[in-house]
Image (cartoon, rainbow, N blue to C red; front, side, top):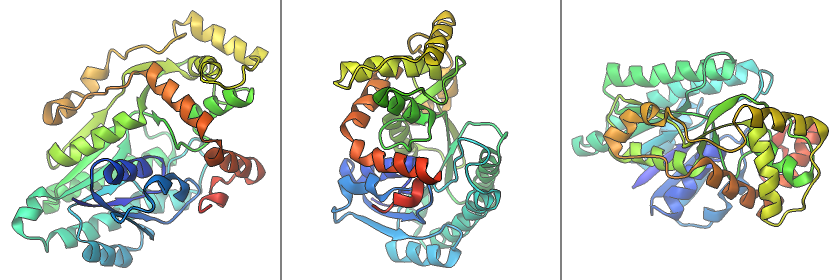
Length: 340
């Protein structure tokens, strides 16, 4: 199977590329313009595979994208090129709107033209999968992504393009950039610092491996025009994650660090709220009902195991995240070292 992945140097996109090439035997073309949350180092495990190739390209450049689609002749497109913000000032409003809305529109336009040239059998099997989030519309990033989701569905209804929209809860795992709350909590645990995002409010989380397996299930069995929601198997506060991460760092061979007074207070609050350990989310079956019905998918990794695996990865891969962390501290720009 031949698949184009947009935003394939980002957190989710790179995981899709690694899974497709490394485990599923697919041939992948990664299109990424290399923004502040892109890292080609995340593709190192598959970079030498003859079934993987990379082209630096902006999804807003319709002509270049159209030419690459015609040359590569994919069986599917996984569109994960979105600006994701952890704060309202994370990226400029213009860049966010252009990538999330205009970029999606132009990708859909190019994909429709390419799809229309395929033989009927390949048209029926083709999928345009858009990777999105269940987050609300309270920031430009989330609002524009919701608008992009509507565009994807509209292209199916208006033109028959076999699209699928995936809307997932917040995802964490290996290769995540250091500004994300879970990555920040794990790194703080390793370095003995306060976690900057610690909160006692419980949230739903999804492990990266489960997220990717859900996306591939949608590619294989998803219903054209469908929108699927993905939830994980755990609900926990960031304060609970911070506290647990410190225990796991010590368990997996990191240095045992003292807990600061501010973090200790947050952890006590989390424990009093019943969040000392990850909890199985009661809403998981409801959120993922359509996805499970259509594809048979379900989350396999519980929150405790997911956090443990994430801590192991960050302990073993400081060479990946330390330079990004240093660049963030120096310039507030993760992307300075993205090609290194």
